[in-house]
Image 1: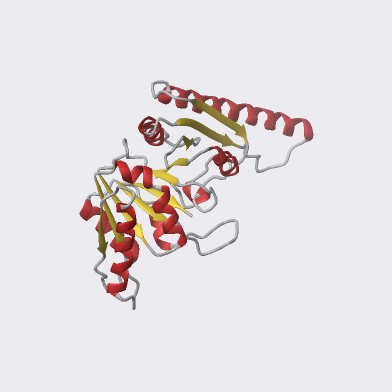
Image 2: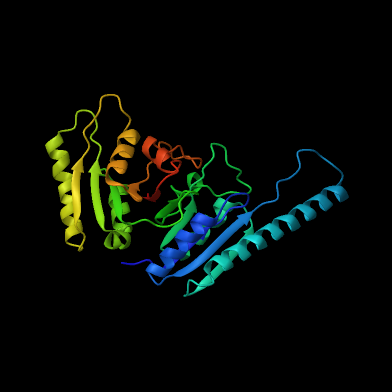
Length: 277
């Protein structure tokens, strides 16, 4: 397994440098094609006017959005001109999340920015919150402060679920390039520690059969300490530059409510995170 096509989702009114840098690195490391995508909708005015005036405002607004999308294309092409391989740009006057989700069919992995405000503008931004549960591809969330894909130490946040199994499988190309891989599970209250350790050891053995040496670890549970806090401590201990995890939600409605650890992973601002659902 490899990544043959890397897709990077760009946003208006946000920094795109970090995600472009990491997406370009991925394309180089795996000799992959790179596809840049962006979309935005003109936000209609919050007042009513007559037909001719309304049409003028709409046309001016859409022209402004097109100019800004053209600016993003120029930024994308400048960032990828020396990366080699196939480079492609796709944009539209559309809701950003809807457009990105549709274009993800052409990609093996999707790169998104790490800034995820509590109330994002659906007309201008496809945030990780919008993408993670529906994209159908591994999503690599890149914080704005990151300037390279650090694979010296990778932390796999294990939980014996379909989502976590998919995340580990989706991350195999990166794990093969990592120097150190640690698999950790955060036990829940009442879990038998020996059984948890046996499960994590199984994952390490599975990775070994794929040529990846990994250290199995079970977190020392602290009373009343959230799993996200424990995970952050382990990530700090091993110096993780990348966290791999399954993505979970509490709701099946279109506006999904993310689980606690997933919520943390799409909003923390220090490490890249690969999420699969």
